[in-house]
Image (cartoon, rainbow, N blue to C red; front, side, top):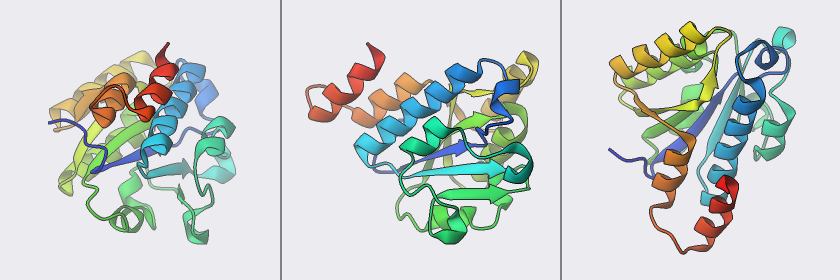
Amino acid sequence: MLMDVTRSVLVIVDVQEKLYPACLDPVETVDACCFLLKCANCLSVPAIVTEQYPKGLGRTSKPILDLLKNAKDIAHGGNVVSKTSFSCVAADGFIDKLEEIPGRDQVVVAGMETHVCVLQTVLDLIDRGREVFVVADAVTSRKQDDRIFGLERMRDGGAVIVTRESVMFEWLRVAGTSEFKELSALIR
């Protein structure tokens, strides 16, 4: 199955000020999430960001928030979901926000930590009948084994493991458009 720009929602899980610096490749992970948001913005793919206990772990990384349209807490009409549950699915307002977007049954997931919040979210979304794509070069953990085995477990559970360039090219589908020209500049 391919990712379809008209069926996709981008979810970025817990890339927060006090968490991401402790993880593997923190700058690359933030850059990868920004890449995905630029693609989503260009192609009108809705995006939701989550924050795990923001009082303790801080807000989402500023470069991500700067790209996120309507970057207010979901309780105030935005698309940032604060949570204490590890799975985004269990967070107040998350499923409601997904269901507000008709026809979007594919969820493209990035963020951290791969083996905790990303994994639990992905498996819960699959249990709810969503097609889930995990962006391998846009997820991270504090330890490499946790990242590797988290990705393997999600694949075993039914998720499709992809890369950010796969997301971009599958959402685009064709070359020669103005969107292709804009987004292909991101990989040069």
